[in-house]
Length: 242
Image (tube, rainbow, N blue to C red; front, side):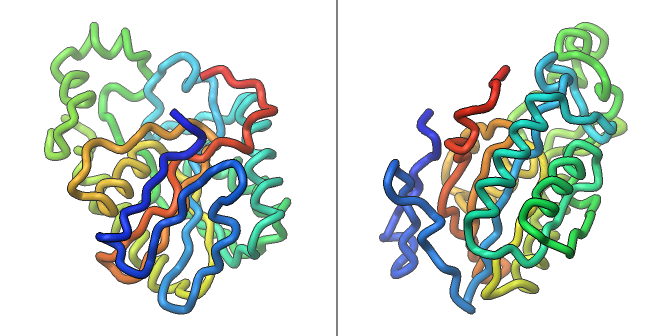
């Protein structure tokens, strides 16, 4: 996959053409207007559990050294771009650690932690490796890995439940910050929910790696435009393990 998925459909978006990322032009050249909020969505830095394919869910897991490098690279990039007014973050440790570095580097004073930006709760699978989960709880693991959004997870959350809580949260953020630029630090399932909301007629969201940046323009509760997706060009100098 290239550094970012190019998403530009002028027929669908009318005059609000999506930005196509390439080596010479990216979303940093676009200045949001008062009719929408620009939301920079960051996936938290890498943890050892990401490397080990261990299911994190709502458990607090700290960043590893690669994750800290990724976070510094994200923060350095964002510090050179348009001013950020506020950072919203999942209240889980791996997201908070990522947020704190971005806030310090970019001089952002307002940081808001919101549990609605958390990763999916996988119930009994939390803390298990993928292999352990498949062996100990095969039916739950199959439900967890299913692409069905309404698939229930005993003791946990369906992807639909994650979708409802995180999209509602982002709608409120977008309406509050029209004309501004904010950062949201969150997790993989939240990214998939954003993609589903913005591109409902397309297939599954392209995977985003730890420390990647996606840019969303939110015009109204139901009018979301993805300007770039999964950009990790700023991570070229970090020691990738995934």
